[in-house]
Image (tube, rainbow, N blue to C red):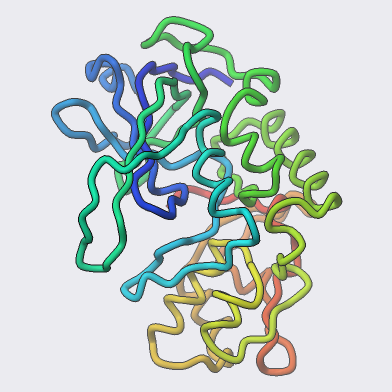
Length: 287
């Protein structure tokens, strides 16, 4: 899989970073002009942009208007700060409270990204590596499994600190590698997996069911929080809501392409929510 390598530095923003809290500044802002994807990377004059880590979904720390969060297992908050980039140690760049009363922290670490495109929001979709890349910045490199294994994306899945979440642009050999390490992490009970209820089911009695009691796939968590914003914790209308959101994806185990997560999400006994397929069995289309 050929991807553009861009050398620069990454920065974690926020006291409780998730995948959307990583910013990247290239050494040469002109390198963004070499990206031939469908979407444009949104960046400032120094080239700084927001990253979306490819092929993974980290648990939410501040989603939606109420900044709802998912459960962080013991040690996960500390480890998540350093796992995005191998030696990243966020330090207080300033100590001021924003209107949500959260401290801001920032730390920089030299590294590189491997990318092909941005998402619809202008976030660069990237694999993130440490230090000097395997080729010159601004060149296309072949991303194989050994190179994937050096990235933070791979490390987060292998240690159980993020779910595998695949999109169509990721090549099958890389997807297979991430599936293998995700399955191994689940079997070993690493990271979030002991608390995961994505396929085993979680009883929804209120917001705390998915913020304090159990962990579910972040994409499903976001859909659920959006549904709660409509004014009810009753799940009777949730399948119809998922159908309306019209996520497009393929189920790898059956080869079936479908629209709407209601096809793989079931509500039983009126209030127990579960996915019928594990996260690594789904490959999503970009919105």
